[in-house]
Image (cartoon, rainbow, N blue to C red; front, side, top):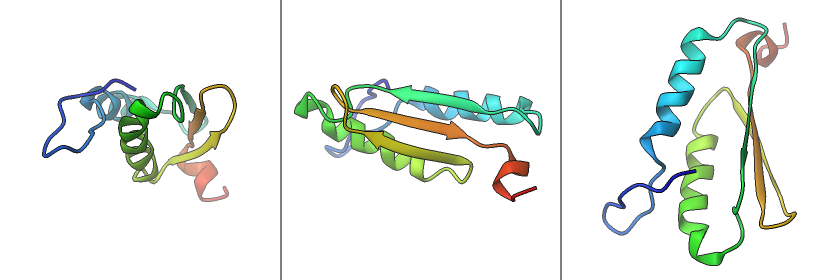
Length: 89
């Protein structure tokens, strides 16, 4: 997660997150998957607004499943699932 310039005091996710997902989705074969690990999701507390913005961005994606693990400084593990796996095929 890379911070970007906030607008109206709100943390935003770096636009490169969207670019990486778009590129992966455009090239993804039906059996491919992508795992993403984001660290420092809980600590330091000063990073929480950016971490929460990241989590919102991840949750807004229909093909991502994610879990926050309260180990270390907090790790968000996310997986991009192929469409075939999402539909149960």
